[in-house]
Length: 298
Image 1 (cartoon, rainbow, N blue to C red):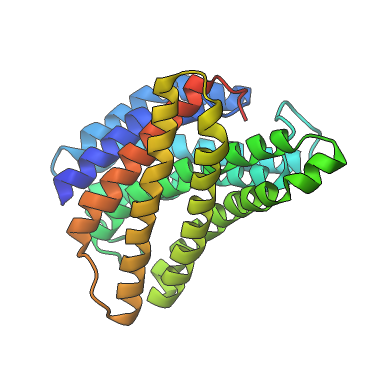
Image 2: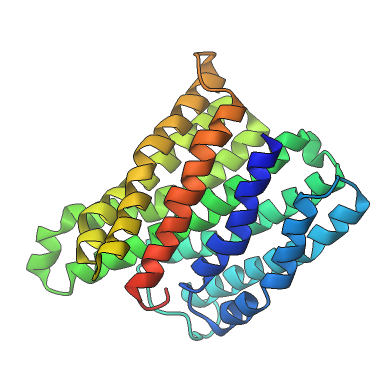
């Protein structure tokens, strides 16, 4: 399982996150994306070396990078809530704003788990395998899913338009988009709380997160995919959407099994199925598809 998880994390750090950051507006994010490759490359290198102080030190610059990214999320939240003078952040529906803040902030959780796991340190008492899975989870469910939910919410708002009759006609789309943009951040954070509070809380988080990701996936399939300009882009978006049907059902099954004792896949098989499919099928195909759409940065 370790090799598989490290391969997934390597791909996410070097492909999914930097492509995704290209979809986020702001000079700070653009500068951070240009500086991404050395810290992310050192973090990936650390994954393939034995645990210890040296590998922990190699991963440390990536932790600093994610801390800066989280600080940008905080500044953007202050700007968009009106607590500081408005900067260059684009105007978005509030649910989409929340999802973007989450996307920018949650890699810090993954970066912290990465440094601890590479040092061999049981952060908050968690086993090293749990920390390794945390790195993957908070880059895929944290960063990628929240970013996609924000993009879907903005797309739905644009489709509704300003006319009242359009709003009334497309009300169902707005509810789904709002659900996606709020449930993905909320579910991610409740899952995090479940690490500390127990399996029942984690199950609740999995239900909320799944609802948000399924809502985003449905809107991606129904509205965004058909409007794509070419077959390859439609295929990427279709894959990203369809994968969620199975992977999040597996996540629910695993969380339910952990909370109730019902039969469910072991962690190794979850990493090989849910983990790989979400990272590659949903995450990588998703951000590539959105980039090919050439939508304005969010």
